[in-house]
Structures are given as structure tokens and as C-alpha cells.
Image (cartoon, rainbow, N blue to C red):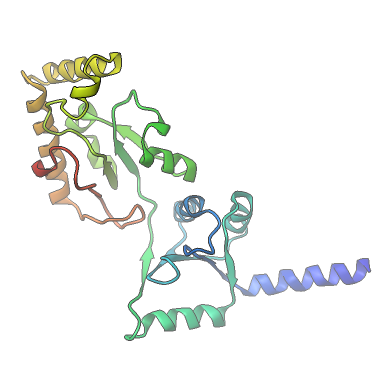
Amino acid sequence: MKRLLLIGCFCLMGWISLANHILIPMDNTQSNHLKAYGVVYHTLKKGLEVQWLLNYRGGSFILPFDADGRTECLLKGVGFEVLPPARLNAILAEIASPEVNADAVKLEKAPKIAVYSPKEKKPWDDAVTLALTYAEIPYDVVYDSEILDGCLKEYDWLHLHHEDFTGQMGKFYRNYRHMDWYKAEETTNKQTARKYGFSKISELKKAVVRTIRLCVCRRVYVCDVFGYRYFRYCFGCDGGRYL
């Protein structure tokens, strides 16, 4: 019995070695979508190329077969399928068909991510930092001072929340203007404005937005965290018209 089990293990290892790719589905069969993004990020971080299958099973990913990546999927509860070469070719042929509204996009770089957010906020205070933290995708928090000091050139991706870029502090004024956290945020913004020679918070925010816009004009705007180059902008936030 032990001998048969050992032979079976060797056969399985041999079959897996021939299957040189892993499919991470992003449809309803996926058990942990956020962790799956983390696995893809870490694969790119290792210098491996990933294929993003647009409109195929929820925007699935194809990764080179890697023992560490497979182990990471197992440990994090991420659903995956081992692809033999024949099945990989069949999937790519299906996507390439002009009758199918799908495409395969090569991803080659793990982006360096910045999130525009006050330093006092914790990861669980908003959905973006909470999702990135859970997915184990590294990011830096930047705010007005860092942007005006020129930090954006260090990043490939900047996420903007529903921020009040008007500088009027109006989003929470009616219900929270007497709260300590609101007063502290207003004081911090006034101090930052004075630091950079502005008399009003609105002037500070306008300078921040113009700095962001200048960087966007010099880079490529892409709408996915695994996009090739630079910015995503979450439309609908206060003062968004400035961008």
C-alpha cells in the first residue's frame, strides 16, 4: 500500500511539473478574491510575467507555474487550477477569437502604490486600505505635504478617495463640526496650509490637485491596480472637478 502511494505521489509530481501554468479564476468559483489579487501582486514582484484574461471567468489570471506561488494559494485559501499546455493553448485560442469579447493582457511590473489619506486614519477606516491590507498588497499613505514635496514620482499608482478637494471641510461639517477628530483635522490642514505659504485650506488643496494633475498628464492613466503605469481616480469625490 505504501509503495503504491509513493508511486502515485511521484506520478502526480511529474504531471504537475509538465503543467507550467496556474489559472486563478476570478468568477464565482473563486474562494477568496482579495487574497487572489495579493498572489498576483507577489508573482509580479518576483519578476514573473502574468496574463490578465479580460472578460474570461471574471477577469482571471494566468501565472507561470511556481512552487512558492502554488503554496501561497493553498495557504491563503485562493482557488486555482493547474493548466497543462494543451488547456492553456485552448484558453488563449478561445480568447483570441474575434467572436469573443475578451483579451489577454500581459502584466510585467508590480506597481508601487500610494493611497491619498490623512495619516491619522487606520487601515480599517476606509475600504481601499482595508482591502489592500487584507490582500497583503503593500502601499504607502501620502497626503498633502508628501505630494507638494514631490513624492509622486516614486509611485506607479495613486488612489484618491472621496476627498474634499474644495478645502471647505464641508463633507462632515453639519454633523461633526463639534467632534474632536473634526477639529483636529481642520487644525492640521490649516497648519499645512501655513507651512506652504497659503492663507486658506482651499488654496492648499488647489495646489495639491494641480500637482496631481501635472503628474497625471505626464504619465499613463490606467483603471486597475495591476495596470501598467500610473493613476486611478475615483470619480464623484468632493472637488473632483479640479482634476
